[in-house]
Length: 313
Image (cartoon, one colour):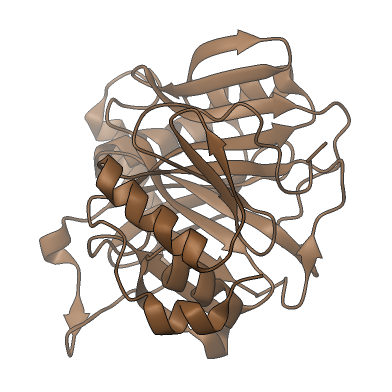
């Protein structure tokens, strides 16, 4: 439990503005099926595969760590009463790259779950074979992000898919997977309580609040003025709990700090709040109030035994 009094009184520093997200790790029920989906449909490069595990990425950069739990239950995306992954968001370098991803998905016959223009970005939504939510998006240039009264503006407007497909066809390049420079742009989680999420992700970890829409069941936070590195909502999970043992879903996601001093500042806030943490080679692991694990690191390491969330064994 977070020591809320000490958090509010003592902790006011923001996480370092150069903080970014790194690799995301999922539990899946059938590794071969998932590798085929992420490689063939979305264009991830298979970097490594061994017994029960695979690492995929783009242009040699690891982005996704899959671990098999045979016959795992589907992930709890949009299931009433369950916390966990809402979606992880893959940021591609340009609109042309997003257009090429859309065209390839259409040609692959894989169904989209949705598409939105958020003013700051354009996004496609779908789910993997285990119901893990995925967003693929491109950012508009930061100087073009709209503001009103000093406040960043975002929306959920329809995305012009026809114009995006036209751009992909005009581009004419053959499909060869995700472009170099693709990375994990943000994480969106289902939580049980917005004030508790705010205390942890803002008060302890130090992410800045961009939009606090508690009345609408959502909170968006970031480092360095980005539109959001973290989305948190209670739309289907207010008062909820993690999914049952043996479910597919999020194992952990990675937060990259720029240096040891920046990491030490976050660790100090975690310790001050009385939250348990686990040392890992290259960083530490901490769980949010709903057992979503976060690996805080300054390097490219992957934690060895992070099994938090519904698939912990």
